[in-house]
Amino acid sequence: MERKILHVDVNNAFLSWSAIYRLQHGETIDIRTLPAVIGGDESKRSGIVLAKSMIAKSYGVVTGETLYQARLKCPNLQVFPPNREFYEKCSNELYHLLLEYTDHIERFSIDECFLDMTEFLMKDTIENKAREIHRRVREELGFTVNIGIAPNKLLAKMASDFEKPDKIHTLYASEIESKMWPLPVAELLMLGRRTAPKLYQMGIQTIGDLAKTPLPFLKRKFGKQGVLLWEYANGIDNSEVVYQTEKPKGVGNSTTLPIDIANIDELLKILFSLTEQVAYRLRKEDMLATIVSVQLRSSTFQDFSHQGKLAFATANTKEIFEKAKSLLKEMYQVHTKIRLIGVRVEGLIDKEEEQLSFLEERKEEKQEKIDKALDTLREKYGYNSVSRATKLEADKIMRKVTCKSNFHFQK
DNA sequence: TCTGGGGTCCTAGGACCC
DNA sequence: TCTGGGGTCCTAGGACCC
Image (tube, rainbow, N blue to C red; front, side, top):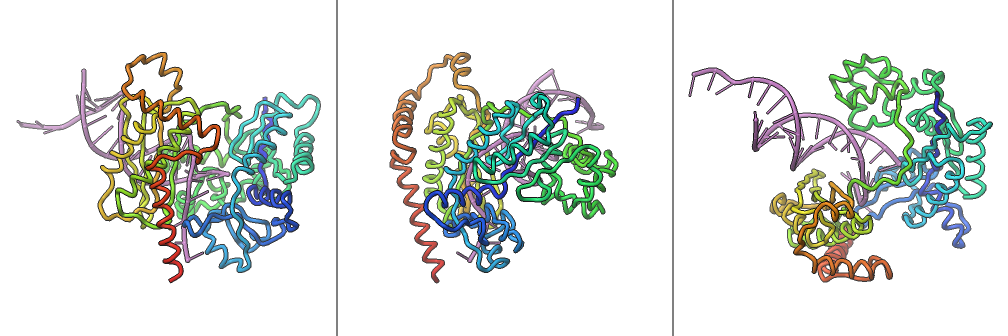
């Protein structure tokens, strides 16, 4: 039986949501009507476009480019900072509205959901349901969405991406040839900036070209990814809409440093601060980690990473940090200027399971008590209400380098 | 004033075992 | 005194998504 899938995608999510927040807090100008973007902080070297208004878009501004580039295209561009807390709130409001239609719903990102409406239509049509959702979101939540209607997730997502904003599109099997095949191959989901040029070089320009390329050829050239892309180009996708109560598979924290650092002691202090947050989030999930990895990005944008297994599954800050520290020390080459440093835990297991299967004698109980005491305070008063000495030092380094970098900019 | 931060999944090569 | 081959596990790096 053919499935009825919707993909709901908030138009210019971060910018629309910031516009609403500002209007709610006394601003009279709607930033959706300006050449505006939501952007990172250039003084912290994270100056990229996170979302753009339709007017900024008309100047050629694209998500992900530097604010510097965006200003070249649109000289009177206005830049506003992100407000992630409010975005979470808006995202939740949307999710709860959509839950009224089906519980076969998958939160794909902060601003996108898939809905499997197959068993929830009653006597209504999928098009009518889409129109109702579309109208209710605009009227009740104050922002617009694009909705894609299709027999699978891939096609629904491609459909919602057609003409924006505030539109509903269908992409049924019979429409693939006319609506999807003429598009440039780079617009296909999972076909990114590395693969597109290779296809163009082979003379594969459109999604239709890709669909008609012999599968064995693509398999030979691109392996599993090649098979997936061929299936997508032909509108094939059997993946289910999964209601997500699943636990995360990894937890990470990374930061771009305000200026490059080539001093391992300073890097270690920042690494501790990052690790402390990772371990805290891990404990909030009631999970334990078995693998730790450390990432570095050099000033020349080369990425490095090392990972290692922990002797025991743990969520203890110090245990995770000791591993992270040895990983950093083994991979760090003296004098290399580091732009970004990050730490991640993976191989996560449920805390309860661990306690049932391993009744091991733990020697780090004291450390766990320290974590627990800090967690309790943080639950009550917020993450930054308590800080260990090392964290304070890390903050100092981040500030110090910020001052240095400001000085640098003034020269 | 040039290039975020959070993820997931895949691949290729090396180590090791039989 | 020629140099297998399959299987598993581990790791670094890369591609892609928002």
